[in-house]
Amino acid sequence: MTDKEQDPGAAVTEFAGIVRRLRAPGGCPWDARQTPETLKTYVLEEAYELVEAIETGDPEKIREELGDLLLHLVFLSDLYRERGDFSLTEVAEGITAKMIHRHPHVFAGEEAKTREDLRRIWERAKAQEGKTQKKAALDQVSTALPALVQAQRLGEAAARLGFDWPSVQGALDKVEEEWQEFRRALTAPPHDAREEELGDLLFALVNVARFLNIDSEGALRRTIFKFIKRFNVVERTLVKQGKTPETATLEEMEAIWQAAKKQ
Image (tube, rainbow, N blue to C red):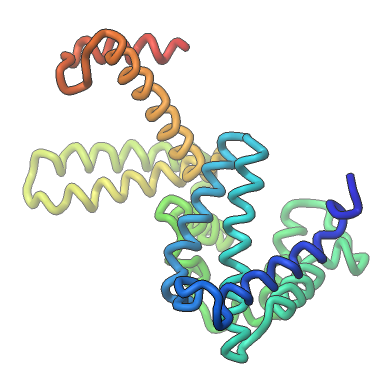
């Protein structure tokens, strides 16, 4: 490992200077027009692209996507610096102080022998920072999270307060109950009950994932990736046969799909 790899300070400082130059007079008109509001969507896109890169396991892609996300974090910090609110340095100082405060078992000699000890220390630190005051327990879970992530965090928060099944069997029974209610909603009016019952079923499945320590968002993303990969095989195979999904029969595509599953 080189000194440059050990200390990113100089590279980050240079990069922050480049961002400032882009927004300065004579810089890039597009960059100069940006505001925190206009950058929100880009931040989300880059975060998801980073997640996608991580799932590929390709270090080069991950490095590139980390850089793209870093751009937006530095960019946003500079926008607020221009307003006189805070600087990138203050952002780094703030998160440094927060991590030290929330890890007294690392930096202050406090003992943490179990996962429950770690959770207790973390929650106590957040309370001291005022993060948990004036909020109901479930209100602390961000509504901006993807739905599956939010559902799992809500289940975890409720469980910490004792509102949970004794074992995973209770969660599985709830899935069966919600499945039957969804089936009934498919054949009985009102039809808008279908959406509600489907939501209940999805929430119940997320609770099963929580009991099994499965990341429901990650599990679904991996299934989506698997579906895309297999359907791409279907399309490529059909092209070799001089066909397309539009011209092939369902039986032909299903046969290729089953073959792709075995690869």
